[in-house]
Amino acid sequence: MIEHLKELSKTIPLETAYDWEMPANIPIDIPPDVVGPFSRNIYLKENLASVLASDHELKVHYWIIREWGGKFVLPIPSLKVLD
Image (tube, rainbow, N blue to C red; front, side):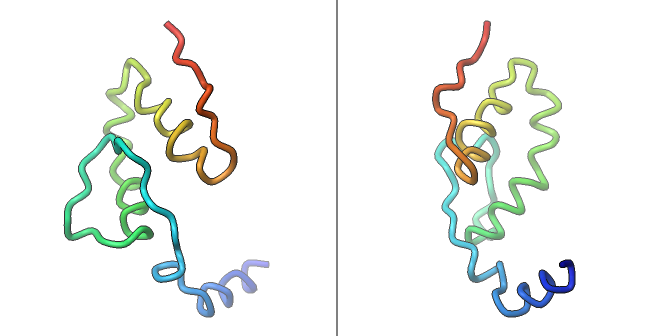
């Protein structure tokens, strides 16, 4: 299966075929030289850890579930922030 996925990645390069726009209110700034949905998503994944580590109110955690991660599977806009 891994070999098949490697072959698919050559046929359909994610850098150009990835079509997903970033949600609103991204919790970090993405530099203007990071262009395209694929590169912006990778940048977000690689640079969000430090924000999560200091997110004691869990606002960014909820943003990930409701806005970012939910877009891939099933949005969960009704997820309530608990006091």
